[in-house]
Image 1 (cartoon, helix red, strand yellow):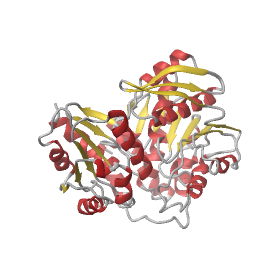
Image 2 (tube, one colour):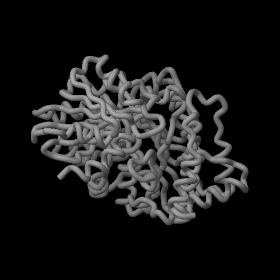
Image 3 (tube, rainbow, N blue to C red):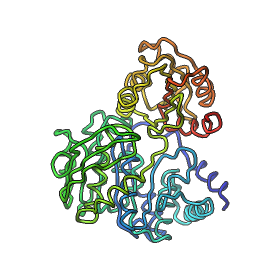
Length: 431
């Protein structure tokens, strides 16, 4: 199987029709696939991460801290921005096209033998487990794709189970309350897990503590953020864990929320090792963290920012960082597109779209993308004055950049599909 064949195989196993609540959820397909492979998901200890927002940042922070300790680290995340290879990494480097094709081919071969037709995510997940086992990683950092309980990644037995936070998202699958969402996410906790709980809502936290577990650490009790200051290029934070205090740690990501993610990540790695980390390890590990597409500054004069905020909670954080940390002096232009599973008006309100001078709406490049005209109608309904529609993400970016001055700022957001399409285009048009 060549790389193109592997992509075609995954495309053929994609289903956009599966919407609404899952009536008969099952881990049987992924369980049978993994069993046929010799259960590679058990080849290395696992740190398993779920949460409504912050999973990606937290996963990368954990990965870098583990790497700085000298471990060989496999990291599996989703979705990708530009290439599916981004989902599979060892020591921060994506899987090669050749290795990717080899692993997907192995899944494809088993499909007929086992009698299981995996979905896109199940196939990728099985391939990731197999690759990590083949490459003999020391630890696997596994990010949940959807919720937790019935996610394909939940065939692992997490040594450390991480919950970043809980918000209302994917309520077509779990809801209608945050408690319902939390119960689904709590499904990644195993009896032998140390649980790292970043959520602080007193009505939600007990849901995680009810699950059988070995130990539980709660943000605000066993670990916390002591100080959180704006710094050039990120945040300067002080973090506390059960084992130590870590002052003046630079986190090269934008937004106050990244300090919370850093505290969760540090606690998770301490729990994995069962003790404190050397201060130099912590500083060097965090300094290496990069998060493409998550409040990523890709241009200056005008300022151009990409952020994959795709739900109201994430959009609210995105707007806060944009208006508070950056506070652009010139015109403010919003490029936005979203998926049908989100209510456009809710996302736009959270983004404070009515505070932008121009809103350019586009269709997210996905079969599940909401038409740009519908996004535009939602923008007008919440009071946006200058609203325009572009046929593609690239056209939307070009329209947003017309006649910009050095003081202006362009924010491109609403979906990782939008951000993923904007990144390569902007590389060709920005200085």
